[in-house]
Image 1 (cartoon, rainbow, N blue to C red):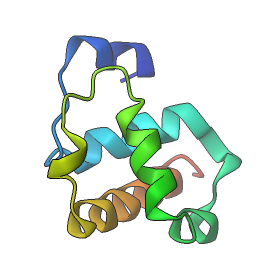
Image 2 (cartoon, rainbow, N blue to C red):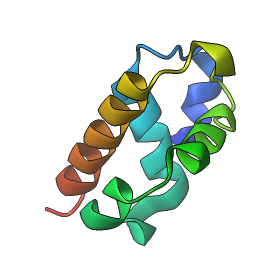
Image 3 (cartoon, one colour):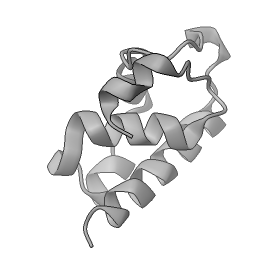
Image 4 (cartoon, helix red, strand yellow):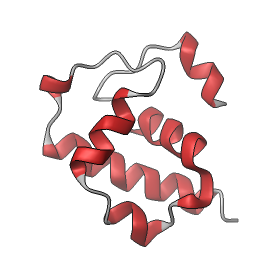
Length: 82
């Protein structure tokens, strides 16, 4: 699914994998595994809110969501390194 396809699918906080795919599409290999895990949650939150089809609200964000998104983003990055 390309980043443009996300415009057709509203994404909520619970859709960690879709969010991670959007982040990978946006940043590609600029962020490897170690860099992804060192991203400040404040930056990560802003990047998520910038995904065009993301409909979640800032106040519904939790540390648990951000941790899961980081883990899924790493998985997405690894899958694209093969």
